[in-house]
Image (cartoon, rainbow, N blue to C red):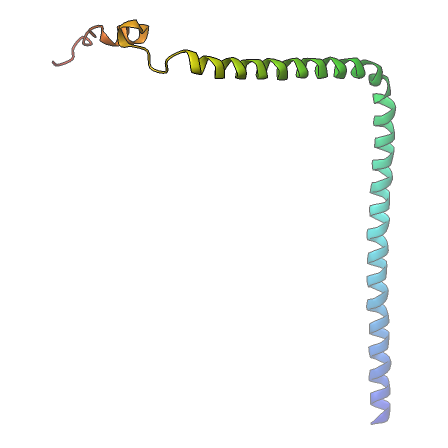
Length: 118
């Protein structure tokens, strides 16, 4: 009986070692693949940096121009908001119908489309 238990234990240990070895080999393979992919990414980023370096001299003035335009647009927005607030207090909100071009158009008779029943 002891011999059978010994052989079962040895078999269990062998299987355990094989499974552990297979798992570690799989992890090593995954790490190796990841390292290779990261190496390719590093090379690509170095190439992008090298290819985009000449653009700095062109993009810095463009960026400064965009900042200038943006500040001018903010000033225009603020001016228009102040003008709108001022005009809201000066101009009546509902003009009289006789003074309104829209009112004159609405008061004009509308011809019925041809073939329509009246």
